[in-house]
Length: 91
Image (tube, rainbow, N blue to C red; front, side):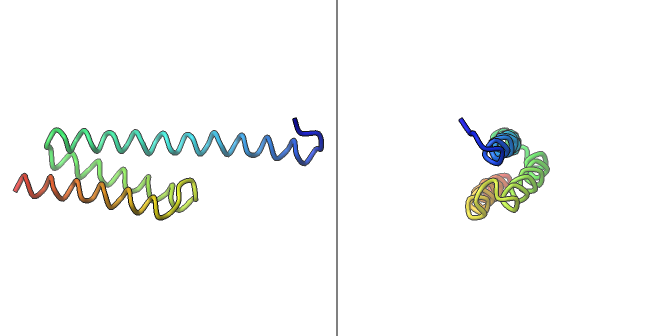
């Protein structure tokens, strides 16, 4: 357990950050699942709408440093590929 005031403050700050980061990651996973379910249903219009939402969230999280920017790019790329495959199969 921390003894100095500065160490105690660091614990409070890191706990606050951990909870906020956890919330953002959870939101990202939720939006990703919504997009993937839209892709699985085969609804191109809904999938495109969900795609815009999830890309916005992932980019925001990557820019804040909650996930690494390369991980954010990789996730976006994989979701884009899924959307493109859906569009190709629908056409």
